Image 1: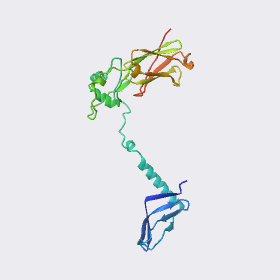
Image 2: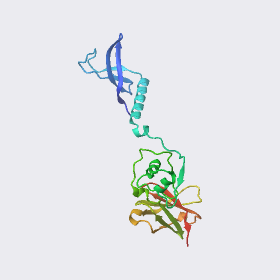
Image 3: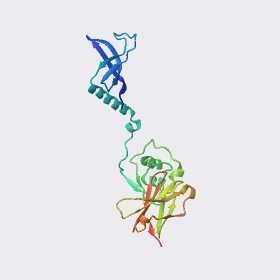
Image 4: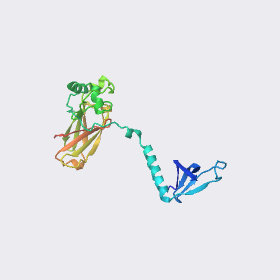
Length: 246
């Protein structure tokens, strides 16, 4: 338990007959409710040693609370205070389709690709995904940074999934050099309890091949599954309903 705190901002004045005899910072001891003034010998004062002035316990506690609140306020990160306003809703949205690129979307609505990236706060490598809802800017922002053309001409990523017996088959298209988690759930259940089936290192294996995963026992009787890939670079979650196979 804290029994002492040095209050640098607290000035204690000792007066007699309207004159200041002493003006010092003090140490408050909460166990005794005393304010201890530290006075060096030889100071111009009527005191030559450490003196103690009584302060009520409630006054000491009130000062303690004010000091703690002031310290907590000072410790607040500047980013929270100066955070920009978030775009809670879009005036206009567009759902990404197969074959889309950032440039195609920008051209469709009259904006440069870097404006789309800036407005949506897309992280590098600025991947867009089929089915993703993109916010369309309402105006051009001069602070939007330039973006290399290799990113704005990259085709939207997507995947297909199939169900074959107790296996789930996943086939990726246009995914960037990243790793993804493969997740599945019973689409007919209200609770979205996902099971992680495994992962795909697209950076190592590339696109254009089939990945096979064992279905957990909890999902083998599900009539309808939902399969999702979570991009570990952008944290985007893309989901599809798999086709049933033999």
